[in-house]
Image 1 (tube, rainbow, N blue to C red):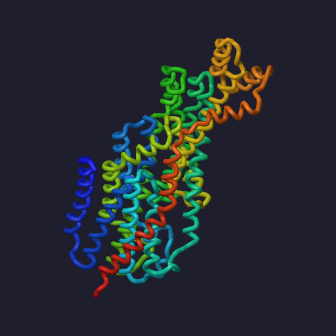
Image 2 (image 1 turned 45 degrees about the vertical axis):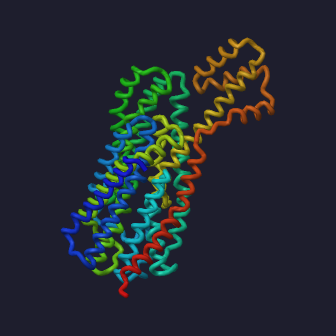
Image 3 (image 1 turned 30 degrees about the horizontal axis):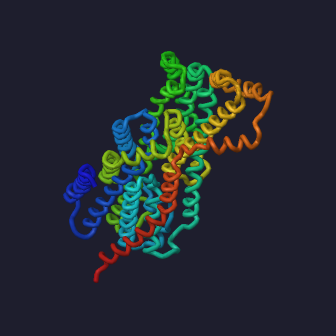
Length: 506
């Protein structure tokens, strides 16, 4: 471990020590005051780990594509994560995350406090391990596993809501699959309507404003339903109407800007892709804001529950979030992101597959659309799994399209085998320059004389198979997702018995 890592750990320790220093002046030491102080420090540790692990999903694609620098992404995410937590994080939080255990079976407030402390610490430790491993995991699943494991340790197996747990298990498949399919679909549409056109500039002038408007529509609905739900609640139809109005306004503003910017660009894929840079930066900011508003509860929810139980000497299903509790969550997420976030940002942005701005745009749009669809269908999904699934989706689509293209070029060359090289090159130049709608006719014209044998096609499929998604990374992340709930649960049960053993009188 280098000097830089020791310095980061030291700064994280300073943040936790600052929590102790400030709160020790506000609470009476001994009894409930000491427990609250310890819980606040654990909450700060959890917030640091949320910032280190979970925020990468929001800004990783923008960094990987080059739309944002790493430092710029950290600055944007830190400001908007903290802003989302403080502005729209809410005043009340559910004390039992996702209803996974029955609070009626835990009537003793002391047992409840020990349970929540064990759950919070277990989730934080698991996130710390996952970050060290370079695996982006769901912080919601981490705290769910912690509460489940500590709850079972405290009140037995009957305390668990196994129906809810079944839905959470299903989300391991639903979230990445939905995110991947939607991201791949968006990318394929962008390729068909812009990249595969002979006049890419004209296509971009027509289509980019439409894609930006669609993203605006999706993000407006997403923010109204999720990011701002603690400030006011609106139904899906009202949110859709508001989103549509904002999208139309953005379309009218963006269209002339895109036309002006694109007129100076070269007619190639890389130049046109740069038009997606600003939408990507905005999407990273909005995703961070919504994440701060929603997932800060993973850090401060158990802390707020502990504070409420100690204050009222009772177990409640809802607890108020004092400002000092929300500040711990907001600052902890921002500091954790700045200190330890770069590792996971690189993982999501560049270590799974190579992302350009069109691919990153597809992932960002898929993230908002998937959450909206899933919430309306009542499907449990994880924002982490959606974003990472989106990255895998565009990566596998890229594999498929690139392999098909290379096989097709090889097939054309085989067709012209034995003829002067310039004949094949002239045909390939004509083919590559043609519009997507014209290529089929060009190939049909070529194949009138002779088609390849089936054996030839089989050989070409094998020869031009591409692996543009790192399989080892996919297996590592999938394994981390599967073991998150049981790992956090087992650790929480162990910690609960340890805390109970310390707190019970001899």
